[in-house]
Image (cartoon, rainbow over all chains, first blue to last red; front, top):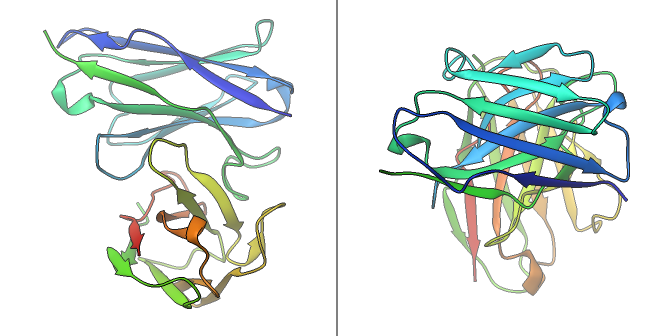
Length: 121
Length: 106
């Protein structure tokens, strides 16, 4: 059974960089596309971007200038960095699994439980 | 970017009812439309992908259909556990935008 687990600081100061890691267990990271999605409290879902095990990425244009994703095949993890954060970046951040041959054609079938990141001084 | 407009934003129904939720894409997405269910405090759960394919383990009272750029999620014979928020998502091209969500309430 594939499981995803997000980890990282729950509180980040304005203008600093948010850093999260998603650890994949029960499956290999070198087989699928992997995405980050966020959800501000009480609001809807926003796709942040995806990374493939090869390291290729695709980011949402709305966040592209501030987002960096990376993958660590040895640790079976992938990571998200979001720079210059503001209060608007306060959200529940999810990692999720996409497809083998395409990033999202068959949807995101496995999700982490989500981790709340609050941006505040 | 391809936008998906979901309606209604909220819906009241009773156990045993049939409900329909609609998503309209801003352009052709060739059936690449997915549906998720989200319960409070939980991650979204994939229900249907590519417009009408039921994810493994999802009850058959859930179904999806498409007509051009309009997609529908139908839930027949609502069960108590179906009261949740539902989201559509286009997966034709990045950014893979979600609809605004439909809160299904008793």
